[in-house]
Image (spheres, rainbow, N blue to C red):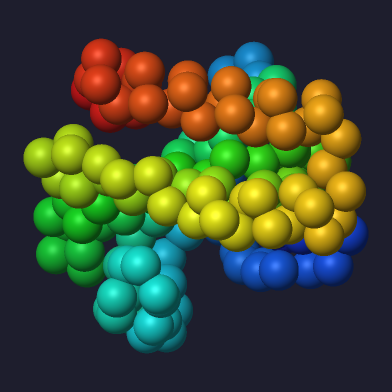
Length: 154
């Protein structure tokens, strides 16, 4: 089991969960997680216990992608986070969440969310120009992947 830790820019822990490492191919790590309890999420609504999460992390990219499947196996949605590239020590994968996200429906229509949170936290936590530029480029790259139906949206 791998422990995943999402942090805010100031280092405070935002969320933590357990997942199984399915494979590592160069900088790509693919994890498999299962929600062991029902979760109420602002954007995703109620996530049922038993919902599966295939999680794609790249150690050299400014985003990660979650593919959520209902307990029945049916695709629920994708959720994309813009983040500082994660660190992985073989047991713990940790990353800094930069608060810009994309919610992708099963038909691959999408909406960018939390842009205001990004702007507020960039000011509050003092994101460097470099971090802000990389975050915006990460968001643009995610949109390109979605619109071109590229992995893992293929």
